[in-house]
Image (cartoon, rainbow, N blue to C red; front, side, top):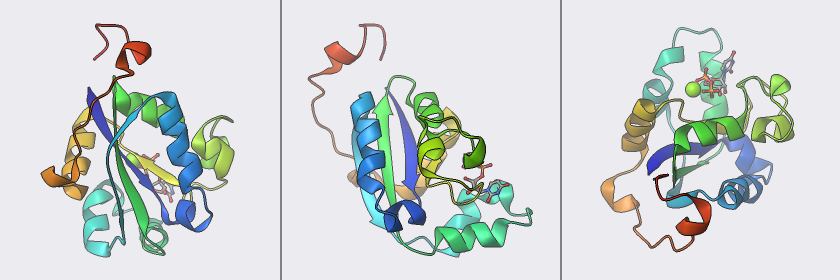
Length: 153
Ligand code: UDP
Ligand code: MG
């Protein structure tokens, strides 16, 4: 099964959307395998958003991401990276389809309530950045036979 990182951004926490957003991933059938709350700092954002460091909005993005703590989650499932990314919707929330998290809960290209990994490779790198081995919990998945065909793993 694939694993992906979701960050519930400071706006999700402040606006009381944490339960709502986590609930969406749970109801979809994804498995929560690690979760923690953390105050991010500039050092980790320089790495996490390295692809954006030359953008004019980078300082605003970082102040938004440090304005309150975040919730870090690792979700597991068959093709979880693309499934979760699609659930988040497009970066600019004003263009995000209704029914996506951003399309239902956000109006901004910056303040868009969630981060989701954009590829399997980046998911691995991002998960290693925010979680260590002991953060992950192993537990049975008794409903998998009702969620997946035998070759979907
Ligand atoms: N962002 C922004 N303005 C932009 C593009 C991105 O403020 O024009 C912020 C936004 O919060 C976004 C984050 O930078 O979620 C990371 O950008 P990326 O292109 O990786 O988008 P994402 O993968 O989050 O959809
Ligand atoms: Mg991204």
